[in-house]
Length: 369
Ligand SMILES: Cc1ncc(COP(=O)(O)O)c(C=O)c1O
Image (cartoon, rainbow, N blue to C red; front, side):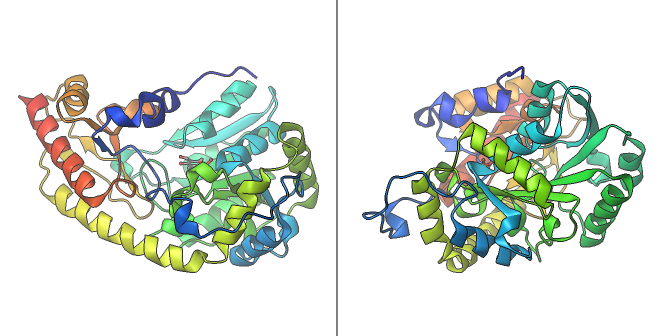
């Protein structure tokens, strides 16, 4: 493995220091919950190793919610990030080929690169509405392709594919004898009806998700992967055991106590997301300098400064940060043009979101002069 720190991590707000940012529009999750809000009872929890696959009751609940046949199809992991690492290191070696859709969550690109496998990238284009072109994807598959990697709803664009398109992708994976990895970390934040959990559709699919984004629990480090392929699951378990043996028993217990009240949290956060998204839409309607593909899920948007405008992009970021204390996710975090930037609208307080959006308007206009 050849590890390299990713810009999105090096420049992340937690590394920069939250105290240096006035309006933090970089986060891709809902507002963080506090320990006190969860009303937890942990006093009698033995601080022991726990089930290597993860707390059985929690896995059963996730399997039921996901349309999976049993908890055997679910492995709890340290965040979705831990699940993605297990998938990549289990399935990929230096001689293998991976097809990954970009833009994407950076780890989905970087871990396969660290492994040293052959990575081909299918770039989604702004001009196509960041839509997935199945024929283009099919033409990029090799006999050595181990899996096709997508994120839906997408991070950073917030775009979503149709159920028919998901079924077609599953069919493509089955017909080519490859696996489909669907990073579904934002699935429950889809504005309309969420897609089915992809791993419920076929043995060829691996789904990855976590409690981090929809519920504002990224500090819990509680995620999971799902597959109906029992032999593959056994290898994923071997990988997990060699990395961490088992999850933190504290994280799993908190997650389980939280999960039992999950529907109420989900309803609350979905209402909050809708209100914030309406605010972003209203702001965006007045931005002549910007264009976007309107998100359909998640709490991020990925607008860009119109290429026809003579805006000094570096100056835009400098003004935004230095004069307005506002931090967004610049395009290079996602290996794309820095005219694009990611706005996270689920995390800041409403007043801070409004302040950050106003700062973006002011900075673009100042950089265009
Ligand atoms: C698409 C996607 N997948 C996975 C992760 C990792 O999330 P976590 O490990 O907190 O569950 C992120 C975090 O930003 C993400 O955006």
